[in-house]
Length: 117
Image 1 (cartoon, helix red, strand yellow):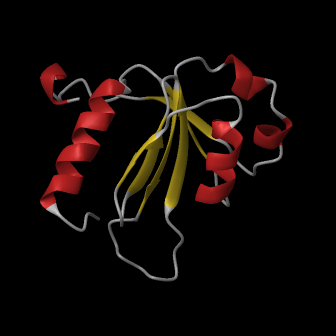
Image 2 (cartoon, helix red, strand yellow; image 1 turned 90 degrees about the vertical axis):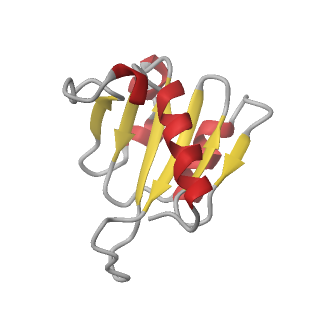
């Protein structure tokens, strides 16, 4: 899932800063479309990764990650992560996505020590 160990460490650090934020995942969501949606009105993104890519703004992020199976025919998962989920609810773009799933970063894994996420 990561080209180098440093990419893994960067992803762990990113995930820790997104704890408690709302994540959206949907079938058919493309990285470029998600970046275009999230970047509207935002400036100064921070980017990283080659196999697992991400773009981070002050209050939002877009993540693209491969599935663990490594199946080349299966497109990567793309997530839109936001600090405030209200704009997602009012978005025509989000409303057009098939089977959107919302979750909270770090919420469903109480067995993981807080300092890790």
